[in-house]
Image (tube, rainbow, N blue to C red; front, top):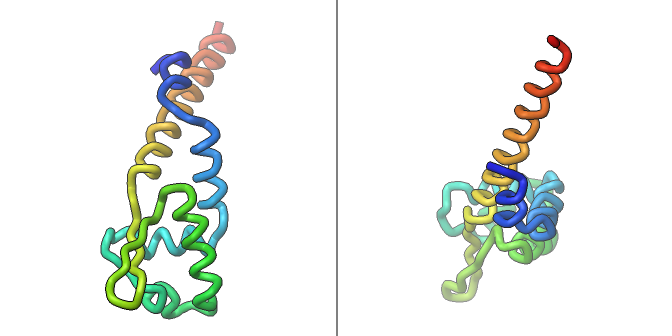
Length: 114
């Protein structure tokens, strides 16, 4: 993929916010729990951790803010779900970066061998 195409496809500011949200170990752990794409309650997400429900809620709010998590109301509680689209976008972005690095390393190798 050429640089022009990659810059047209990717929105760096949005992706930076997603990377920042995933940079917190607690939020990364929440994403790992939600990866099964089933709805989870705050109680289920808090189970087995030393993190308070209030802290989990704050982390989920951050993840919702970048589009990684959505919630639905079921009765009196909210259930949280992972939206994989932003992660897929990050994977595409990382694939482009990896291809650019591979090209740069191949160019360096060719230069050194000549």
